[in-house]
Length: 450
Image 1 (tube, rainbow, N blue to C red):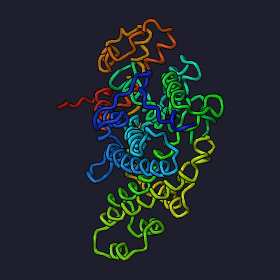
Image 2 (cartoon, rainbow, N blue to C red; image 1 turned 120 degrees about the vertical axis):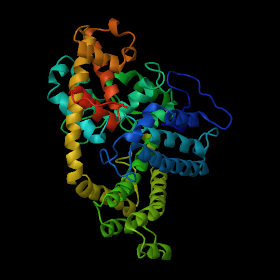
Image 3 (tube, rainbow, N blue to C red; image 1 turned 90 degrees about the horizontal axis):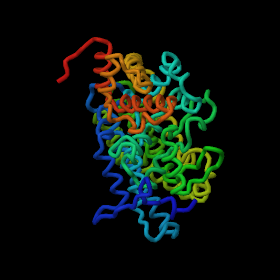
Image 4 (cartoon, helix red, strand yellow; image 1 turned 60 degrees about the horizontal axis):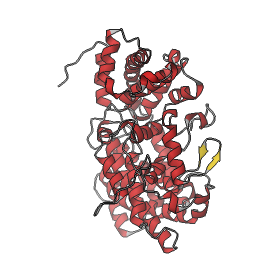
């Protein structure tokens, strides 16, 4: 792979990119995402704690903004290092790389359904259990989109199809940003062993054409049938996400009294500079949550330095598609271990806390009630049998105009798949609050909506 093609600034559909005064094509990507309704709704979507009432706890929007800041710095610093070695095209600046990574980071969670990963699991479980009869109507490669529903793939669907220009390029982002967004550049059917806990992918069958267009336009190498190498900048997006998780989940744990300062400090200490300023802060009377916030910048700076060094050291492998593992696994041991230990602490003490488990159980019930109504109505719509008044009203709620315009020309099996995917667009776009409200309406426990 080469940077000339990897940094392709043409837009999806082969559209010519526009550079405006003070705003490059890649900055336009950033602005398109920021101003989108899908991005705005992240403000009321779960990061870790569903329906948290504590305003200091992160949601998907604040998390995405923070990841984008880290990603931007990673991209700029990598760009500066590559420019020093004359490895970038002359028409590309270090800031361009920062803008691309920042845009991809902004969008990296845009496809998450209500209740985050719990929502993903609820959708998968519903199709594998109560929704099995609908799966039987579809071919195997479309079934896997549903039984292994993936927020990453839903995100790619949003930015290439459902937001702004529906069924006509979506946000119409640049090829470089779209390729950087593809953390797992393959379809669900090509994701590997169905029993794997890490079965991830970035594209549904419905977006195959857009996926192949992006891969071809940016020159992503195909290393096995159906599976492409990542865009090198996708590693920076992933690292920015993991760096923020490592710190932010711990801060939220402290804020919600799920973690103690002593264990958090012991974990972070290897990545902190041994300075008088840090020692004074650690032994001060400042409350624990504020200590973590004041140390955040120093830790993230150390993370960024390690990430840049790892990227530059593996530059040739990245372009050849031969680098094993993620970027953090190639960082200096102190940084790598802090990130991994932070994830383990969050999994054991934050993710497994009874308060979170209680809310997740409720989230499963909410998602199940919505899927019962939405999918049955969507399939009835696909089969032109919407004689049931309830089904008709659900289709009206989703929006009749929002289904593909050529629906009636498609074979019945394809119609069913397309209608199910549109129903999932509607569900995945909901906030936690709206999903909870609508599930009550669907179940006959009506609430007045203001």
